[in-house]
Image (cartoon, rainbow, N blue to C red; front, side, top):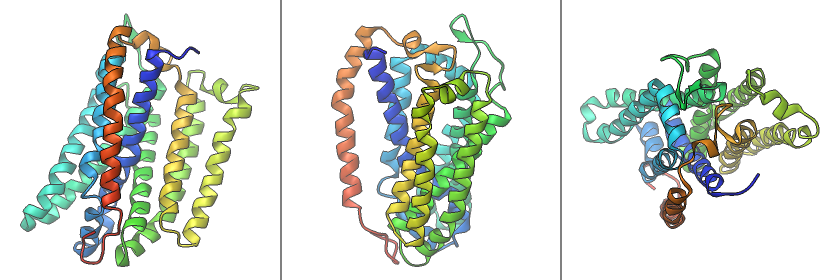
Length: 333
């Protein structure tokens, strides 16, 4: 494999998507878990724990989607055409979540309704993201460099499985975030939720992994063919190790470690995704080189990305550092 501009942009977009998943994932997870927290102080603590950072977290979604459109326009056109319903559902869910986040404070008379909108929007966005991932993995029909399938090709048992798994994963991120960032009754509630959600996430990882091996593409060979299996086997091994470390951290009442270990599990799933897909951006239809914009365009945009991404990382890191403390009983950092 040669490292060129198309590869560089593929890595940048992968980084942006992963940054979005781990940062906005716990935001969406808190929304998914919102109904299990009693109305009042616990819900206020939960939502205030993300109030300083939730808007900035979505920067990475814009960067990932915009980067895909600019750097791989052919793939962008095929994927968007094939997956309009789940992508529109995701965007509508994010809109509902964002409006409800602000309106529940400004319209206390209708706060119960805004809380429902916050939960529905968060769960819809998370589920749609998982369905999109599953639909991409199972393959998109491409004919004459355009989408060649039907309106509902994305809707399969496999995509529904990946959707449900992402919802559970985000909920675990949300619970472990609250373990780290809150105290009192809210933290105790999050402690109780985390073990059950961890079981659900690990079960989802196993189920999706096994189902992926059964898809029609060569995923099975990529994971099991000798001698590659000596490397790919490290991913499930590390997943088991992180799962065990997660349980130990919960038993010892560590506050930060469960969140970091959950991020580690998400990181391993991304590594697994790369093993399954690279160098295809649309499995078995378009490689990153097939779908890439001209080198002149990629090089011009790369200059901007090299300047912009460190700036985003700097102000994001500063925001997390400033609000590094816990949300107290009064609901403020």
